[in-house]
Length: 124
Image (cartoon, rainbow, N blue to C red; front, side, top):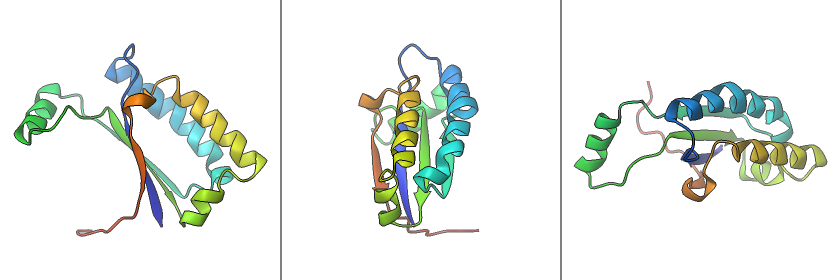
């Protein structure tokens, strides 16, 4: 299995609450509705806790920059499934719709994403 990790930064005009509400209640169901066309096996949203002081203290303790507003994780069975997800007209249309919706709440210029392979170290 492979995973796409997407560190999200909200558009400047949105509060954290507005961003997370839209992401969870509007974009999440939209991803779910196109998952089959894009061969997505799993989708998880991790929302940054609304505790600015704690987040700033954690970042400062490591000399790190400020964090993100959330992280999206999407899984595919294989690199081939990921690569072929947009090879069909239905897959291309689904990708177009999701990207168009992302532009409503995500600052893409400050939101890195990459493909990863998980190596679980501790599992319960």
